[in-house]
Structure formats: C-alpha cells, structure tokens
Image (cartoon, rainbow, N blue to C red; front, top):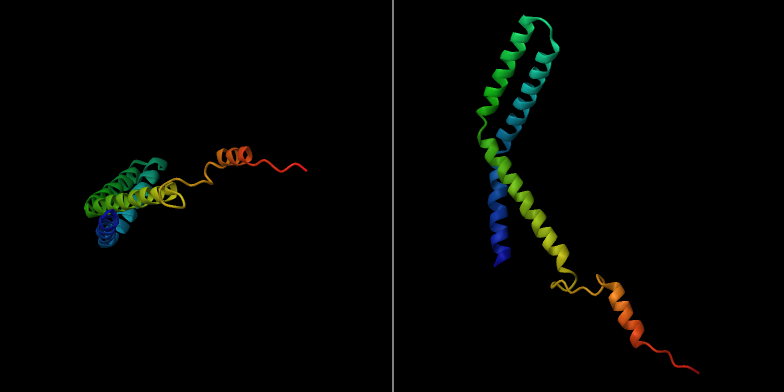
Length: 123
C-alpha cells in the first residue's frame, strides 16, 4: 500500500513541477536581473545612474513577484526531492534481505562467532 501512495504522490508532485516550469524559469531570470541591477546600483557613483539602477531593480522585483506560481512549483520540487531521498535511505538501510538483518553489516561479530565454533583437528 505504501508503494502505491508514494507513486501517486510522486506523480502529482512531478506534474506540478512540470506545469510550473515556465514560471520557475522566469522567476530565476527576473531575480538574477534584479540582483545584477542591485550590484550595479552599489557600484555606481552618480545619483542619476543610481536612480536608474534602483528603478530597474524595482521593476525586476515586481516582475518576479508576479511569478507566484513558481513558489508552488519550487515547493513541489523540494517535497519530491525529500520524498525520493527518504525512500532511498529506507531502501539502503533495509539490507539485502529487506528486513535490515544483513550479516555483512556486523562482520566482526559474525567472524568472532565463527572463529569460536571452529576448532581444527589436531593430528
């Protein structure tokens, strides 16, 4: 039952990420342009250029705010990643036979038990 729920949830989250891929890309572009405008604002010395870069930074920030669906897509991508990571850790910790009782994990303990029980024949 857990596998079916995981697959359905992963499918829904994957579709959500794909549908919001355009706004995610536009959000990335507008935020990077706002960052560049802000860096140029800090570098310039004249008041006119500072006003120009500040206005451009504001325009890019307003454009990035209009891409609110991108936040939903990013949240779905983060949840999908955490779900995948958690599932992978569960599979890795399960061991070879699926119940976490892997004899190779505790090799030293198994070796001690084998060496105690083995007594060679003396000739």
